[in-house]
Every structure is written in structure tokens, then in C-alpha cells.
Length: 192
View 1 (tube, rainbow, N blue to C red):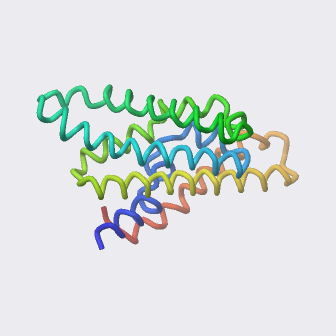
View 2: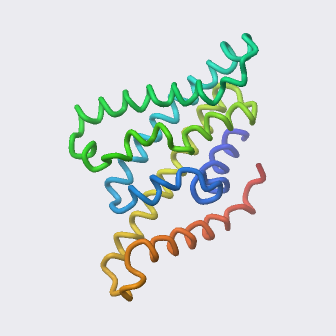
């Protein structure tokens, strides 16, 4: 039951983008097309899953035994940077079109506060390794869900006849706010 609560809480109740407001840069920058958003979500999911394992192992087998917990943030950033480089190399080989579509946002996963935030939250919540992975993957699924929903709404809005002053960023920000309020409706489901 605890894993179920972590999953539902991470995807809907405490959605990393729409409730905790982490990862806003890729949320606004990449979410112009559903296909690009899904690719970015997959890349972030992979990085978060592997980073959660690495963060857990580094925290409890290196930083804590050596009493250098204060090095947590810089260590996690280095691990995430290495993982992003690996994803970048793989995407360039496997899917050059997606690699081009993600553009500058792919290397920016390194500084995506959602990825670093999840690594730090795992430690703060004192999850075990299995819970850490479930939390990271669920959070990444929530990130992907928010990204894809927002991209779908933006694609639909491009087809609408909007006043000139509302086109582009203004309507995107209003839509993001409404989407965040919609997700807040889930907050009565699970207490975390």
C-alpha cells in the first residue's frame, strides 16, 4: 500500500511541476509539441530513475560514512551531469530527430531543478532504495504527464482564433496556471 501512495502522490497530488513548481523551464520550453514533450519526458524518466539509485548509494555508502553530507548537492549534480551526457550520446545515435527537437533542453536536464530536487527529496524523506526508485520514476511520470498534457493544450490553442495579445506565452502561462489548479484538486486524495 505504501508504494501505491508514493505513486499516486508523486504523479497527481505532489506533481513536481504543477504542485511543487520544479522543472518549469523545460515545462514551458519543450512543451510546444506532444512528440517532443514525450521524448523529453522519457529522457527525464531515465535520468531520474538512474540518478535516484546513484544518489541513494552515494548518500548512504559514501557521504554518510565519511561524514561529508554537506557535499550532497554538488555530488548529485555531478552524477546527474554524467547521466545526461550518457542520454545525449544515446539519443544522438538512436533518434537524431528527437535529439535535434530537444535541442538545448537536453543538456539542460543537468540543471533541471526537478531532477536535482528528486535526488535531494529521496534523502530527506528517508526512503529505502526500492521506495527511492518508485518515487523517482513516479515523479518522472508525473513530470511527463504534465508536459504532454500541456503540449497537447498548446497544440490545440495554436488552432484557435485568439486575440493577438493572448497568442504565444500569455495564453501558455494562463493554461499552465489552470492546469496546476486542476491538479490541486487531487490533493484531497492522498496525504503525504
